[in-house]
Image 1 (cartoon, rainbow, N blue to C red):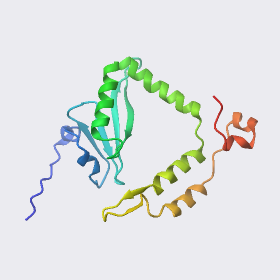
Image 2: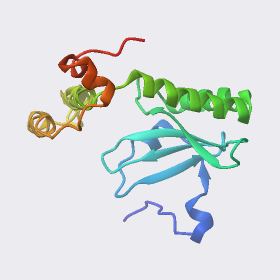
Image 3: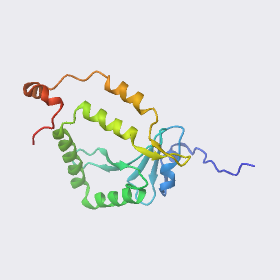
Length: 181
């Protein structure tokens, strides 16, 4: 006898309904992308993908533009970034006020643009993420994506975008060096 309870769709209201987020909800596998809003911190939500990656985000209204914006808080990890950590970060951001919050996220975008990550850097970060050992359901520690070597070879073979004008002036080293700040 099946005793599981499945929530029925309640139209538009049911899709945006809130729950009390827990670590267990973030670890749950889903058939398609699922967004769950937190009942304890209304502006916080977690988006879980079919690959099992749960990402915390924070919604707020930008007072300068009057538009709703979303700030990325982090990716769920049971050891380093849990639901409580995301909730604490969201409460801290809410305490700053909408104007300061919008400015913080604008500054973050500017800083990221100044860092100037290359496509090569992003590809290598992704490969490192894929080959990171994690505990599998059978209890063994194996790479997050067991076919990471095959995927890495495909990623490394991708064509690269043309270098920016500033990078061309600095020469070939631009692909291999961090920008000077």
